[in-house]
Amino acid sequence: MHTSPSPPGGSGRADMKFCSHCGSARIGLRVPDGDNLPRFVCADCGTIHYQNPKIVVGCLPEWQGRVLLCKRAIEPRYGLWTLPAGFLENGETIVAGALRETLEEARARVEPGDLYTVISLPQINQVYIMFRARLLDLDFGPGPESLEVQLYEEADIPWEALAFRTITRTLRNYFLDRRQRAFPVRVSSLERRPPLPPDLLAAG
Ligand code: ZN
Image 1: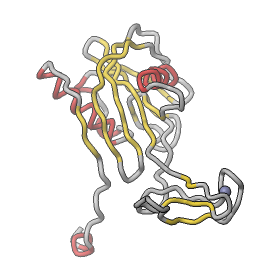
Image 2: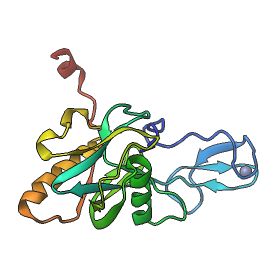
Image 3: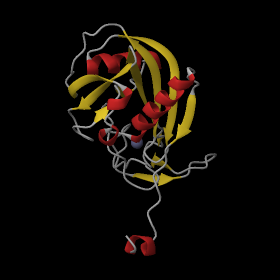
Image 4: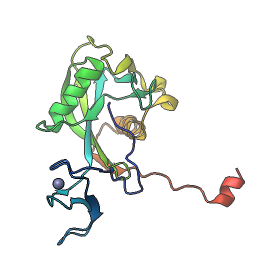
């Protein structure tokens, strides 16, 4: 999954130095008329540059009670395990994107199943959308972004070496729901933990 590092700033807003429409450097943050949030606005051509969250799509591929995980060959989180997932492309449906990422990262063909988890990450401006999926055959292996691809039983999931909290949450939900034999769509959010106050930090 080629997720980028968090954008700078508390708002998660990506910085902008030049207008991508006219090339002007006279660009600044202001609240446009009729709006209620600051946007980068070009003083020369007047273009308002809206920034919105990115969508990450992926699969939880299942095979006879086991799930397929990929060991990342790229930063961030090199060497940690993840479900196949990545940024949705323009012009692509969320299901097609999830299948494409699964093919790219795990060289795996799956039959897409139901929508499963939708997780908002407001501080880094991403939304994860994960589908359950049935692996169609055992002809899988690492794509260029993976070091290894492997099927895991629940008891062997490398919980301490998972790359992202979204993946941990999706897998934990999955194994709990599997016991109930029901997989409702789970909508949630993950927010950055607030820093500890200094007195607690000092107390270790
Ligand atoms: Zn401009």
